[in-house]
Length: 179
Image (tube, rainbow, N blue to C red; front, side, top):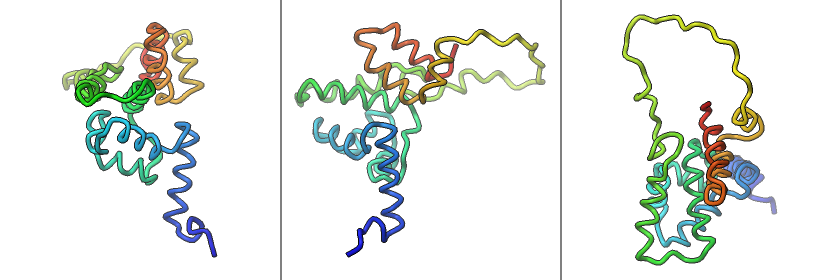
C-alpha cells in the first residue's frame, strides 16, 4: 500500500510545509498551537486573538497550509506563553490576565504589534530630495540581521528579556530594522 502522503499532492505540500516549520521554529506549528491551547484551556480562536493573528491564519499555520508567521511580534507572544506554561499550569483565575498582558506586551511595532506606518507617513506635498549621507558604520543590529531572521530575533529577545533586558532590546531593534 502506498504512503498516502506521496499519493496526494496536497498532503505532500502539507508535509513539506510542516518540515519547513520544524526547520524554522524547531517543531511543526500544530504541535506548539496544540500545546498552548491545551495548556491554557482555550480555543484556537482565543489563542489567535491573544497573539494577534486572525483565527483563519492560525488555522492555516496549524494545518500546514502556511509555513511562516509573518509578524515577529506574534512569534514573540507565542514564545512568552510557552515560557509561562513551562512553569506549570495557568490557574483559570489568571488566564484572562495572562492573555491580556501578552497581547499588550510592547514590541518594536507598537504596543499591540500593529504597524505604525501611518504615524510616520509625512503629509502629502512636493517631493523633496534628501541629501546623500555617507554610509553608517555597521552596528550590532546590522550583524544580527545578517545572521538571523526577524522572527528568530524576537523569539531570542523574549527568552532573554527577564535576565538580560538590554540585550533583548538590541535583538528587538535588530528585528525591527531600526538603528
